Length: 137
Image 1 (tube, rainbow, N blue to C red):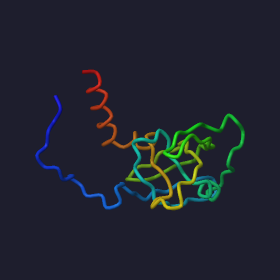
Image 2 (image 1 turned 90 degrees about the vertical axis):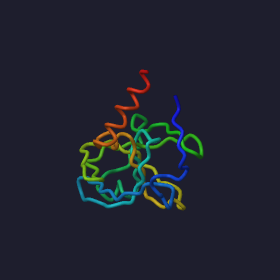
Image 3 (image 1 turned 120 degrees about the vertical axis):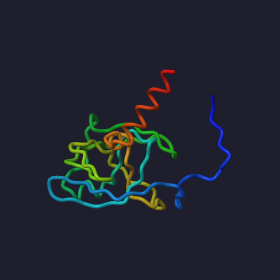
């Protein structure tokens, strides 16, 4: 049975319509900070190529390191890199795969925190558990 709410205002006001957070990406050479957005529609986390190179990785060109992604602007093929760690929201995920892709220049953020990062957060773990439970009913 669907829930109906009398109050049509959201519980949280998001001025940009997004949830921006600051994150640190780490590689063999350095650590870089960047502004990212929580994106529950993204399976993988996305980091711009210049940040990947700045922390000490080369952008892969071999076919086995390229994946097909579906974006609002269409299908794209982008490289994937395993970085040392990504830290945000009080947690650090080590050895995490990230897509090397630059968002639109108009974007208010540098990258996306995808489900491969978000699933490590206790609040998201509980959320995913409740979603799975509701799908079984």
